[in-house]
Length: 164
Picture 1 (tube, rainbow, N blue to C red):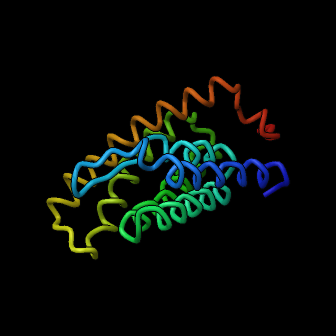
Picture 2: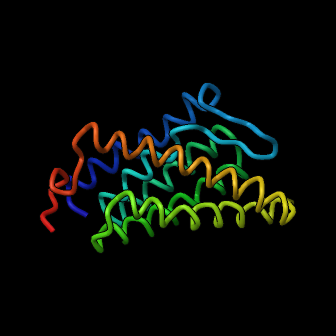
């Protein structure tokens, strides 16, 4: 991880913390027992362009923000951001277009978030349908936002100092 990736990663961690802490109530959507904070995946998704380690660190930073704001169950779900972001970053590093990496990581994201709530007393039905389906829909919305941000700021692999 170079200096450039570290700086961009730190900025994305800061955003990943601020979104739930400052905007959790305003951007929050709650359909019990599911909750979602709109745009909370955007920094994590953008971090996939920086590489696997950076993506994992931004995902863990996201979990910290949710732990402080919403407690351990939501934080456990947010910790799964590190899993899907790391996988997506590997796909991007192997040459898959960003939008395809976002599409391929959707089932990973939904499955891991549904799976992680089972120890917290969720039934398979509630975990799968409410959390899994809710996460998939949330992933789609945030992926659209991430793609728009990446396009709007002209963020491409070349602008991050990568030549391959």
